[in-house]
Image 1 (cartoon, rainbow, N blue to C red):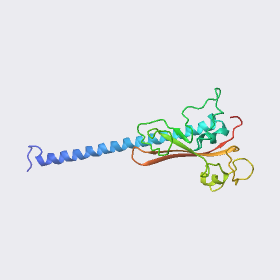
Image 2: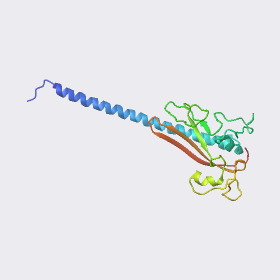
Image 3: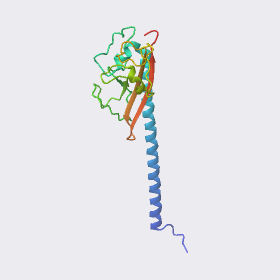
Image 4: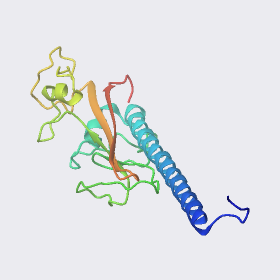
Length: 201
């Protein structure tokens, strides 16, 4: 019959082992929970930056300058539409990159050969262009994922093969933020929209 002397050494070791396993599980669960919160924060930060970039293109940049300023070429960037009464929006980067507010949980990858340090978080803008950078209606169906081209210059045809960079009235654009999450996986936020010519710049 068991006496009231207390726990044996073996029983104490078993109890301590169970307690240690429980604590380890609790710590792992807490770390996993914190990682999920950080991952969600990354996605929200990236989405907000993409939406802000879309708003800048829609409201702050003259419509006929959007493609020239935000395409991959830097040789055609034109700031002549910006002046003291219509200043260049802050945070814009020539070519198709834009800054995303830096967050220490981001481990971003920016592998493009541009002038922005890899430690700076950047987003990218894309248009329906060919390999030479020409804005083409024939690229719009694949670009938007619809398979149907759209009429960019309002001439009632959707298969023009000429560069419409200076005559577009509709401008499809894709806003992308790629990053390597704190959780270790590659993540992407992608917004597609079609900008419409405004009555005023």
